[in-house]
Image (cartoon, rainbow, N blue to C red; front, side, top):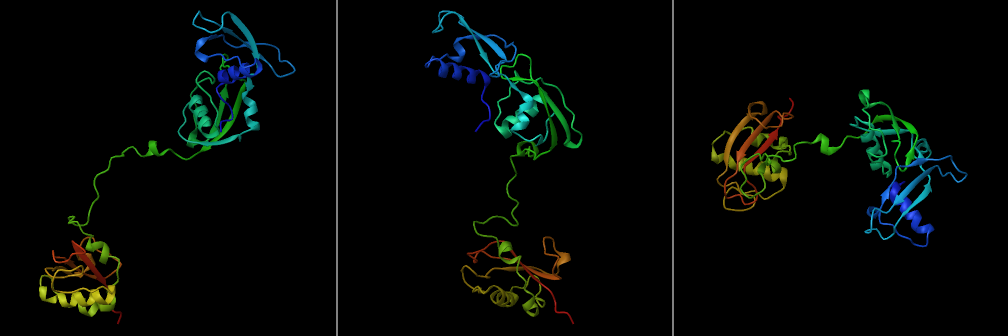
Length: 276
């Protein structure tokens, strides 16, 4: 909920309330610049003349009304004197930040627009009312500290490239995601004897997978967990193959065949040798 509405809207609403529902359309009349008068007991300090510009107005003639322009200094009764904002370079930009944070309605007709300097985002900003502002008089000073920055200012590239998949996408989950995070050290003896390119060693791969994952891997036939057609790409130190987890000493990398219905691409079986 806004603390203050547009001053002219507020004046016209008050006229309607105090005059048995007389409604003046904002765009149907001319409004003079505010006139300064001695402050009355009620706080009234301003006059404004409302004039009919012609026959298109429902009411003819003119009337002078009295109203209260608020002192900017009184804002400190309602909002903190320290405000966290980022990226403001003018007093008007700061006033617009106050609009967003506290529901004010400052426009360029209300605040004298001047450049401001905030070394390291910190300093003081003084807002001064434009002499012809219908809602405000005086001035107010705020202490400014760095605030949260806006995402739309920090993130200027909003159209990103496609996902960088670990292997060509074949419409199935990646074996990389299935295997990469697991520790196969408990079956190092099955893995450390493998040789890249020898399909006969897939029995050892199958046994290691079954033991570590608990899934029903097989070496023949098409199934979710099939190693048929799988190729052993690499066996050796993790330092010798890109994309490996360097927390482990060794790795076996296999490329799944088309008979594996559950996964595609490469699997990484990381392991450490026992400490002797």
